[in-house]
Amino acid sequence: MREEGIEAAYVFDSFVASHMEMMHRAMRAKLRTMAEEIGVPLKILELVMVIAAGEIDTAGEIADKFGVSRSLLSKNVEEAVRAGYIETAQDEKDRRVVRLRLTQRAQEAAGRCRAIRKDFYGSVCAGIDGESLKVCLQVLQQMWKNITGMTAQTEGAASCGKGDR
Image 1: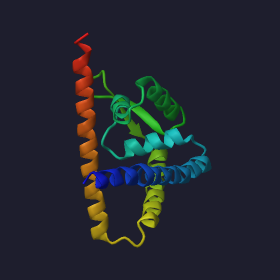
Image 2: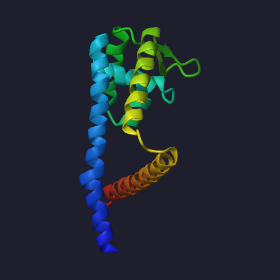
Image 3: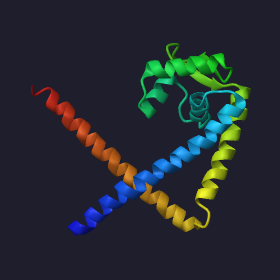
């Protein structure tokens, strides 16, 4: 059993992590090409894609989700506003909250990004049947839950130790 664990660790360190990183870089390269074509920095295009997904729409939420500083994200939002890709609007219920909205220009860019991503991942998954992709996704989702649990335990232990000094 121990040898299987060691083998699994080797597979993840040497194969899965490196190949996922390589796939991520290849996808970013395609998006970078598009960003250059439309004359916008990749960071703005990535911000547009996050907002276009529709799950989060404030700078604070985006910063928290992706683990970046709020000040850095605020600078990127300001740059996107100046470039005409994002508009800001105060929340009707809580005037302290500023919502980020995509302009028509940004919505068109987001549509192109979705098409690029669909083609890219379609090519990546060529020859893999739907059932295998479904199983792969289930495995990755379980791994994410496991990692999230491990991270929460580590952070909880770290915060418990702070008061002990």
